[in-house]
Length: 315
Image (cartoon, rainbow, N blue to C red; front, side):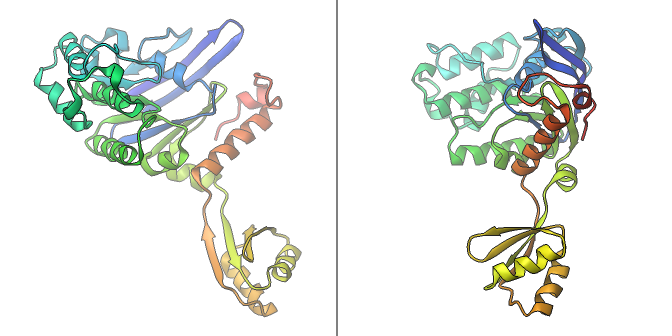
């Protein structure tokens, strides 16, 4: 597993990662979320020994990455900034990596087939599309058959079919008992693949919890009602003290009242209902709400600083 303890990184006066502590456990896909500049990439670089922390530790199965004798056999990584030599063929690039980590040469062809590049293995990487280049990076991450995966924006450049393929691959890796940490800005995709969430903002931990718990605790749930008389029903509901948002097509989104109570009010007032359904907030809505609340509590949105209240905020 990945164990991050009190990880801190400063550049001059700016604190990019600030006392970060969390664990990525085996058997689950953990989504690593945060707005731009939150410190996600810096944290991943510290995990992989590419950036030295000022304080704290990042351990992979109890070891610092730099202490691993054959690191590709312990952790497979794909960072946004990683780029293989464009003059090498895909097969030669992977063969070089395999040799450096004492991985059997036959494994190269296996991972090329896994990522769908077996037919272009002898082409130079410089001729590849963005999506094909991303698949080379994923092949390198899988090369050592590692128990831990650390992937930064892994769906970049992949088409719809490729995104679905990667989703299925990550799920199967977690189901095999591996630890999988992925960072992505695609909230819809994250909602489909992640079991756990680690959410950070301004370098500080906001949430470390199961996806279901995060949505249940912080998601905006509402009831959608549709009626031929939306304005009149809205007035009745607002008179009962709930929040009503009008949407096109005679729809009302109601916050603060269960569907059963709305049904009773509609029946008593003689309002016909074409729809009455309960909805949970999406991951994107919930994430933005949590980030916004953390910024509001810090009291200095947009200044790049975190006040004492923001430092103590945890969800």
